[in-house]
Length: 355
Ligand code: PEP
Ligand code: MN
Image (cartoon, rainbow, N blue to C red; front, side, top):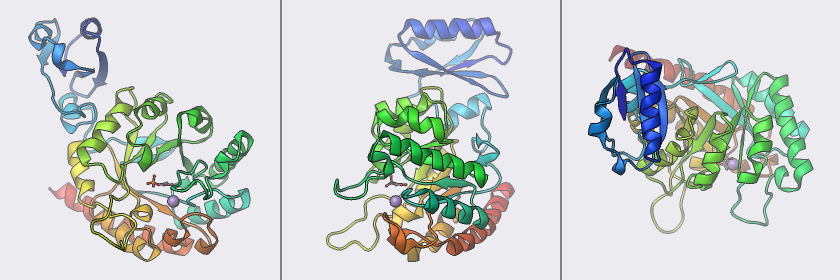
């Protein structure tokens, strides 16, 4: 990390970047309120920091060992770029701002009529963002893979419904990108690109998605520790895209035999991650529990833990859903959750502001 003097000139900053490139590394420029900080992307071991410290305009040159430095709180603090939380702006929605953000919709998009009816419902219930899987990651090749897997035409048609529904009901839209071949197509229609739990480690996909410059909702792998999760989020940041929304969606449950929940919502991960990074964190109680009866309590708990938002699978009639009906809530339940979570968020924010 190269910390420039507050009055460093553009030429001096350009000189430092040129020098970094000579070592075969890339530079991440963070222009904050106080000063410019330049992060190094790549293997820092060959860097002579003492040499960098002597360059004109440089205040300090230090090596950082953590695998996620570009998204670390330390990095942002040095430049004064981020205060409490990065606000990811999508249209007129602020993710990580003063208000919690609610993402809702079906697990999978099944038809235009289904999507539009759900979109209207979740909008009325107070949600900001419409979700709907078109390329579904499934454990069995024999189950419904999403309309996107039928063919190119079906994929584009379903994506266009998502866009239309978003425009009609004034909702921002998000959908998952399951593979590299889908990146351009999904980016053409969606406002936010979702990386699913199974793709957390797919660094080529992360790089490609990051390069679209669209915000990315990045889900934690169900077996990944926090350091691993953040290390892979760094792949997105390394492309100069820091519009990353981290999503806690449950980790593998413990024990032999029957498991009572699909995964275990790692509540403590929420404030822990917020301490480590300046990125907003949302929770997905739907996949974390796999149980409709637990969505209200886990939503409230995630909010109390400081989540910046929630992603919840919602349907006008969960029994009808082709995928994940058992964990999908009704529009009415969503309305209750949103109203309770807004109150919890207020209490948490008041307490934070006091401290
Ligand atoms: C989803 O949100 O549609 C999904 C498949 O979730 P996850 O990747 O967390 O399993
Ligand atoms: Mn699902």
